[in-house]
Image 1: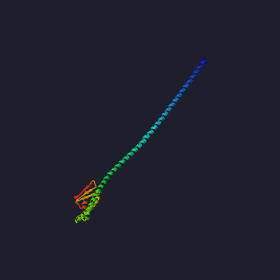
Image 2: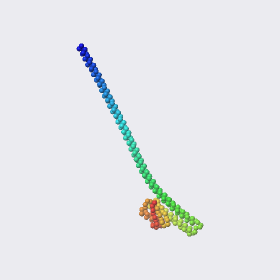
Image 3: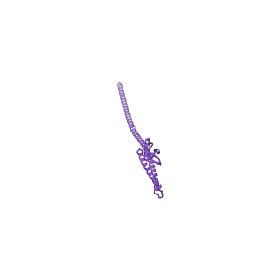
Image 4: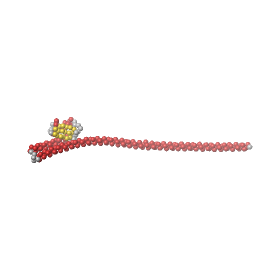
Length: 219
């Protein structure tokens, strides 16, 4: 009877040991699994964070580095082009104004000289008709001859004066003679006092005119 009880106790102890070993083994496996799972999760999170960080860095470089450079280059180029365009436009406008002013002056003096010479040619032609007419009196022919000579002398004197005035630095000038009054128009914005005196001396000497009869103006 005692032997039976002793054997039962041993069996209970063994059973308890087996149960304890099984429990410990189960607990250990669960702990290991938890640790591995935790490590995998942490490793996975680090990888994802690294990937996200790399993607953000690359994206920032592409956007900030690339686009900013292109934008700055484009803006600089546009500004330079705009600046050069404005400078060129300003230069062209200035040149156009200057050219138009000179062209207007040239047109005025060219047209005026043409009209003046045409008038003299018509006057000479009229006197020549008197000379060639059989109905003209001798006195009329003498007067016509004198007038033709006078006109040619005036034309020659005007040509000499205008050429001499050009040597004084005035490219454009024109002289009109009306009896004893002589009008001189100079292509300039202003004339100095000494320049006026020089022009008057030229006209007085070459056209045998009095200083008070010489009138100078600018165009």
